[in-house]
Length: 114
Image (cartoon, rainbow, N blue to C red; front, side, top):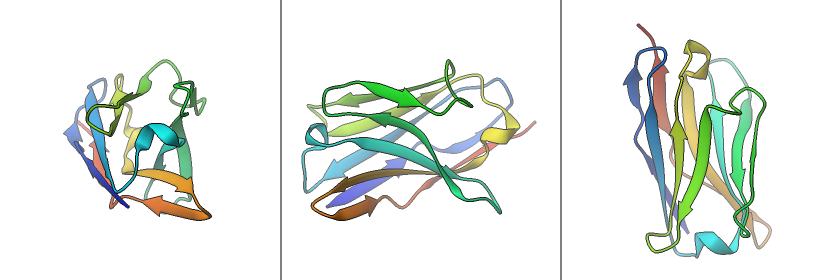
């Protein structure tokens, strides 16, 4: 099982980024897939989830600004982020859980700064 996150970078406040999480070794559409972020000096927090039935859920801090989606043909999960704020600065991880194990990608850094 591997999760490869990409798409992070430096963006100005109000800007947009799209993160990608390429899954391998399992079928992403069969499980809940999460984006989790960790800001410097803070705990990890769940940002967004997409279920195997394609329903989605978001932390209140990103509702209306972030959209999680999945491309089953590419076995990839995305996080479209718009209206970025400095407080969105964090390392973003994709995550899933099955078979009693939690799997994490390596993280991609998003920095929102002018």
